[in-house]
Structure formats: structure tokens, C-alpha cells
Image (tube, rainbow, N blue to C red; front, side, top):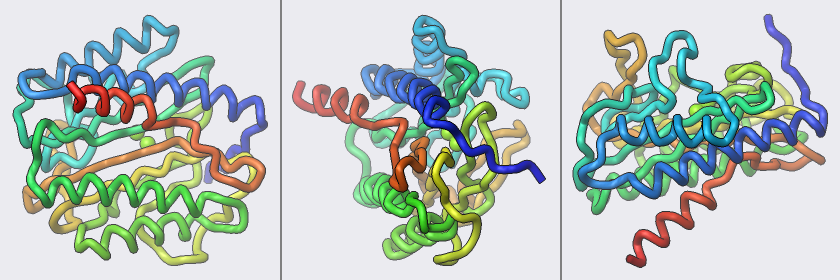
Length: 263
Ligand code: MG
Ligand code: MG
């Protein structure tokens, strides 16, 4: 079994640089995302932005994945392909981005509402983002992976939403997916102990309806079994000085969206 790779303070800073580039890339996506835009345009602008800033799009060619972003629309959960699909009012779009910078990975995802979405979808977006925050609160020394998992699951299920169980968060570093796995469901006090130097991606995938998912013939796309929408928010987080140090950020995205709403 592969071992957990505990990072030095220097390595955490390298991962922070990658994660910050991911966050800024997602903010570039936020600037243009809206009705009339294709998801392929979003992919292409992200790829250009990452390369112009000296990074490598981490998902492109990862196990053969053909794009720089995973873009998952409405009932798609994760790993969707960017396409010529034109976004319309009422869509929700989960955008997952990874960057390699100085050999280290960063990984973050954000789900966007296109114009006005219905009430249940609005609640789904809010609650999934809250699930991420609640998971991060437990990412401190003395807790275990199961404490993160439980916090995410409890909050989602309180709102009668389905928690995706087949796909999980993960360690991040010189590899995109390192040990330990970080599930979004589980028992308090169970699993691997969280310790100084661990860097993990926490990434709740929450469905408006049932928890069940299906895997498409394209080998990648995952969607909900009942056709109801799904949301995905993700941060790369280090356990540093006993606390959660969030290496990616949504602040750039939030600033862009606030600015757009005011215009
Ligand atoms: Mg991701
Ligand atoms: Mg991830």
C-alpha cells in the first residue's frame, strides 16, 4: 500500500502556489461563464491562462483525460467533458481544475449557477459549499479522516441530499491522487489520523436527489442515477501548526461574481 507523504513547510508553499493558480484560473472561468458560452470555450481559456502563467494543466492527458478542465453540467457529478454545448439560464456547471507548478499539484472545484436557477438547485449549491467548509473545520490535528467525512455527510443529509460515495477526496502533492482517501461519508473518530504536514483535497459531491450515480461509456463522465442536479466544491488543504491551512481559495471567484452581479 502506498504510504502517506507528509510535506515539509517548503513543500506546502509549493502546493499553495499551484493551488492559487488553480483558484485564479477558476476566477478567469467565472469572468466569462454565463448564458451563450460553450463549455469548450471555458476549457480553452483555462488552458491558455495556466500555460501563460508557467503552469501545466494537470488533468490534460491524466490517465488519458482529453481536456484541461472537468466540466460537469446539471445531472453530471464530476469528470464531464467540455463540449460545444451552449450554457443556458438555469444550468449549473461544476468546474474542476488542476495545475502542476514546480512539479507540485493543486486541485480545486467550484459549481456555478447560470443566471437564475430553481430553489432546490440554489439550496444544493449553498449546502454543498457549506459541506466543504464543515469538512475543512475538522481538518485539524487530533481529528481523523472519518471526522471530515462525517461532517460532510451529516450536513448534506440534514437537507435530504444524496452524498456520492463512489468518489472521494485524496492526498495532494507530487501526485494528483495520493493517500489517504478522504470520503464524504463515514463515522466520527474513524480512519487515518490527521497529522502535521498532510495535504488533502476535500471535495464533497452532493446530489439534489438520490446518492446513486452512473458511469458513462466515454470512460469518464459520472452522472446522477435519477437525473437530478449535482454539485461539487473542492479545496486543497494543508494541516499546518495543527490547523487547516486552505491552500486554494474561492475569494477570487467570489470577487468576480460579486462584480458581475453589480453590473
Ligand atoms: Mg478536483
Ligand atoms: Mg480532487
